[in-house]
Amino acid sequence: MTNTASTAGTESTAVTESTVATVSTDTTEAARPARVALVTGANQGLGRALVEGLAARMAPQDLVLLTGRHAGRVADAAREVAEAPATRARVEGRVLDVADAGAVAALAAELAERHGGVDVVVSNAIAPLLPDRSQAEQADEFIDVANGGTHAVLRAFGPALRPGGRLLVVASGLGTLGFLPPRLQPLFDGASLEQVEYAVESWRSAVHARTAVEAGWPVWVNIPSKVAQVAAVRAVADGRRERDLAEGTLVAAVCPGMVDTRASRPWFTDYSGAQTPAEAARAVLDLVVADGVDPAHYGELVQFGKVLPWTGGAPLTEQEALLTP
Image (tube, rainbow, N blue to C red; front, side):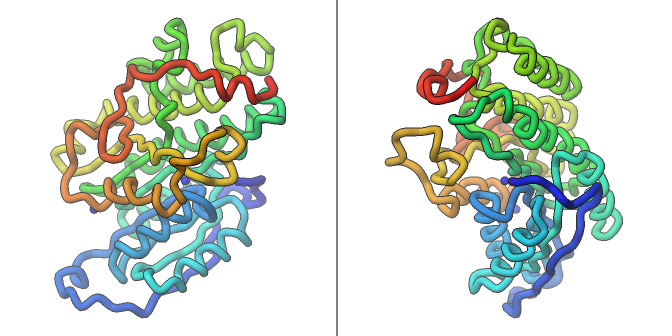
C-alpha cells in the first residue's frame, strides 16, 4: 500500500457501517485477504479527506474506520463517505477519544482479535487552538489529544500492525529540533518514548507554572507539541526498524503542508499556497499505497515524499506575536 469534547466513555463504539455496491473485477484483488485501515480525528478536514482517499483506493472487501470524538458527527461523516460515488471499500464510523489511552488500547485489541491486526493507521487527531485565548488555558486539551493521543496510538497499534502495514502520525514541518532553542533540543533528540512523555509533562507543568518562557519554551504550544510528536515516532521506529524494513512496513511522521482548514486559518496571514484537505491528503496517501518502503523515509518526518531534516528549522516570530500567553 487526522475535535471536540468526548461523550464516548472508555471504549470505542460502532455508529454506522455501509458497504458500497461497486465490485472489483480484479480476481487477484478479490482473492486477497481484507485489509483494515483506521484514521483518527476523521470526521472533518484532513482526516476525512484521508478516509475518502483510502475508501476510494482500497478494495471492496477492505474496511476503513473513520474515528472521532462525537458520535453524531462520526456517523454523518461515515455515511457520507460510504455513499460517495468514488468509494469502493467498506466504511465504518467508530467513536474514539484518542486522549483516552484505555479506549485506544481497547480498539487495537478488538481489531487484532477480529481481523488479526490492522494494515493502515493514520494518527491525525488534534484539538482546536486559538490565538485569542490564553495558550496556558488551552494547553491541557491540546497536549492530551496531540501528544497523549499520539503516544497511545503508537503504543497500542504498533504491535497490532501487520507486516507491510503503515503507521503514520500527521505532524508538521514545525516539528523539527531547530524550532526549539538549543538548550531544549536534547530533551527530544535520541529520546525514548518514555523520555518524550516526561519532557512533554515537564513542559506542561512549566506552562501552568508560568515558567515556560523563562525555560526557553515557545509560547505557541503548537511548536513543542509537534516536535514531541515527531520525537515519539522516531523513538518507536528506532526499536523496530530492522524488522519493519525487512517486512515492508513503514512507521513515520508526515507533514501534509499548509492546509486551509478552520483550525489553521487563525495562525497564518498568507494562504496563497494553502491546499484543500483533499489536495493535502494525496501525498499522505501516496505513502500508504506505495509499493515497498523507502528506507530513507522510515522513522522520519516526510513531506511530499522528501525527508525534512530532524535538526532543521528556526524559531518562529509571526505566530508568537499573534497569541495570548
